[in-house]
Length: 518
Picture 1: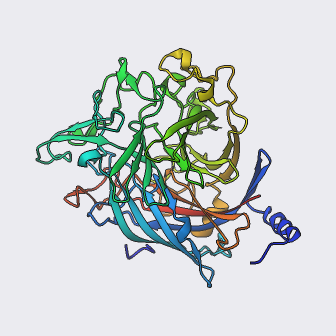
Picture 2: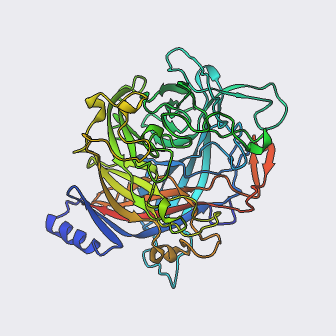
């Protein structure tokens, strides 16, 4: 990581009000159930190069599947710069040509951030966010069981004392296409991350979709199986396959399960994309990327009403299912689609709990950005939702089964069933504002070059602008998931070199936004 910028006083209430009023002249603002949010400016940009590698010799890719900022390590220095610790969660490894036996892991970085508020489109700033790679922790299962990015088997499970039955992967050779004895493992497509005060990691995945707790050293300590309405079923039984065949069989082409889509439960690659934990560490929340299959989840036009779950994790080794609500995802018009295919649902990629009881959610379109045929994204936003007036469907007690009588929405039309009040959803911060992006030499739409935003933005982290005297101003960090796309890549501990068939080199891009909450 060398060549490319890798890396008490009481506030008088009237003065504070005046300061907030001055800040409302930002890019845009919104009010959600009485709470005001202002997008002040894009404050920074940085990246980890496409060919960077971790201590095991594997490509540092997919860094934006989720992130966690250590609040205790966030510092503002006398020169106005900041430093901190950022944990980054990649997903299942390089998989654009089929899944691999990639060991799920989390990376640790030191970040250095120097705001450039005077940057303009005509005089843009160079990257002002640097990443210094520190460490990697690999995850493994009970009794030393392998955790892997390979797709789950169509049927079957693994059983360990003190754990729910876990998804299973059976693989040939070494799981990368080389010789080996074969074996089994626990498939994990990591998507959500929270690092607890004691150093343990909460991780949500897409295959289960399950939620896992790992020790600071990476050992699985507990697992949460979701309600039956969310568990994927085929032919009447659990079926955790996401129809993502391994690369070592026909380069990942074709189906590896029948039917390709589950009959009920989470759709393929639509698991627990969003995970967050309350500030006191006692409540964990997860949000499905989009609706379940039986509630409209098979089509982009109907997958709007998705499930949001709460667990009491006061005792992290014995989580308790505590609540469930429905979040209405936003709609957008895809200019490349036929009128009959619009509007589409902007599936969500991350959530973040706020101390005011509301939540940020990162919702976006797909197939638009660097590495795609279409370069201009039309919906890529950090929005806000509030569940204070929404129906707790767990408390109602009739929505946790696999047949249509328990569905919250119609399978064919996606229309919400009666008797359910959904969360309040408020549009907020648009990633795609070129007037802001251009201040750091990046852009949405237009030519394909290193400054074009990547397609997938899937992470959120928040720290105060003034750590010693917080005043409602925050920095929001977001990293992109580059799908490990590079022409100089390595998997299997550096033993498997690869060049993505797309021909692209996609950096792990990062954006920093400055906002105000009041």
